[in-house]
Every structure is written in structure tokens, then in C-alpha cells.
Length: 315
Ligand code: NCD
Image (spheres, rainbow, N blue to C red):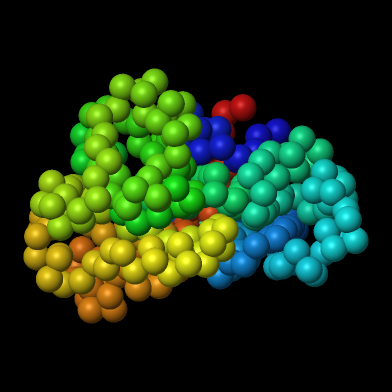
């Protein structure tokens, strides 16, 4: 049985196979309309979510399956003191696959150790968000035609932004990618990302603070929200929250084909006036989220692609 907990749990071939299936589903979603008939997805969300939970549910419904679950720890037995391990053991009796979001780093990993069914990490604290990474990779590949030899700029809250940590973990595996990390001093990428990921991969990277100076150098820009819920001190949040704003003026500095990604929700780091720019790719990411999660559920449940007859994960 396989889980998706860390962004590198799938090797390169498996990652590409999930993206390829997602692309095929995007072209003809109806081909998978009944592949998960009779299967149930449990969504255990201990933290707020709009896109991730609803797109998981939409994905399972589009595959013919059904969903159950809770959104908000206060609706679960966590309020009575139940551990994640016990909840996972119990819910795996009710479902065929579990998607879990939790404010504590490592909670989905713990759940996977006690679950009888595959567990998907739908975001754990400031740590990882591997399904968002698959969506980001698919969107970059659709826009740029490749995932290698790219100069990618990450801008905003790089300390707490789990989508950034997960995407960097995957992008270092492709040849020739280099990174600009654009943030204020206080929101720089964590040391462990440098030591465990960037340095072993010999990746070239720069930590800078100016978005304007960096924009002309980028093939891809990944904007992020300042993660209010992970700040200890409200004053720091207020001081840092609007530090970067991408607007049409700044977009003039960027290459004509530079996609702008953002995992959403956005606050004020991208103005609404950028939405009509053809380079704005963040609503493509939302649509891709459903296709990627359909492909992922099929992969983890061992459901073959109805067209090729192939399973995504060979073991
Ligand atoms: C992100 C998350 O939850 O980490 N959102 C998402 O899943 N698309 C980003 C964020 O909350 O800022």
C-alpha cells in the first residue's frame, strides 16, 4: 500500500505518470466517470480549506466515488482528546482512502502508520503540501513545456509557505533548475530546506529582497500569501503582510511568457488587475487541482487508466 506524505514519495517516473494521467483526464474527464464506483474518500481537515478539500471531494465524485469527513477539528473527536493515530485507524474502517490536513507537522505521516488505507497529506503545518506540488508541476509543464532548466522565483512567505517547501523539493530533481527566493529577512526559506534539499542537489539559488530587480530574470514566478495563522506575533504579521504586491506595472518588467503561479487564497499580494494578464496561471492551477487529484486517487487505489489499461504506480 502506498501513501503520499512527503513531496518526494513518488519517484520521477511515478510523478510524471500522475501528471500524464491528469493531462489525459483534463482532455476527456468522462473517461473516468465510473472507475471508482463504490469507493469512499474520507476528508479529515483539522485546518480551514476551500480549494483542497472541495477539489478532493469533486475529484472523487467525478470518478464515481463518494465522500465523507469533517472540516474543522472542532467537529471531530480531537476535541475529546482522540489521537491522530486512533482517528486514522477508525476512519480507515469507513473509507478506501483518506486525505488529511492538519496544523501539526508530521500528523499525516503518523496517520499513515496506523491506517489500513492510503493516506494523502493535504497540508501539514508549515511543512509540506505534496498534492499542491503535483498541481504546480502540471501547470508549469503546460505553460513552459518542460520542468527542467527553469529559473523559478518564489516570493512572499518562504518560511511558513508549505507549498514552496514541497515544490522546491520536487524541482531540484529536474536538471538545471535554479531559484530566486524573494522575501524579507524574517520570512526566508528554512535552514533545513537548504541543508536537506538545495545543497545535496547542488542547486543554484539566491536569497534576495527585491521583486522588481528579480522579475526580469525569471521563467516562472510563484507568489505566496503571508501565512497569518502561523505567526506568533500579530504586529509582525501586520508589518510584513503587504510587503510584496504584484501589479500590472511590475508585470511589465517580466518576460512575455512568464507564468504567475499562486496556490491561493490570495490576500493582497496580486492585484485583481493582474487576473486578465494571459500570464496569470493561478486559476489554471485551481482547475488542474481536480484533474491531478482524480489521477492521484486512481494511482493510490490501484485503478488502471481506462484507455491504456496501465496502472500509474507499478508497486
Ligand atoms: C495553500 C495551503 O493551504 O498551504 N493553499 C492551498 O492549499 N491551495 C496556501 C495558503 O494557504 O496560503
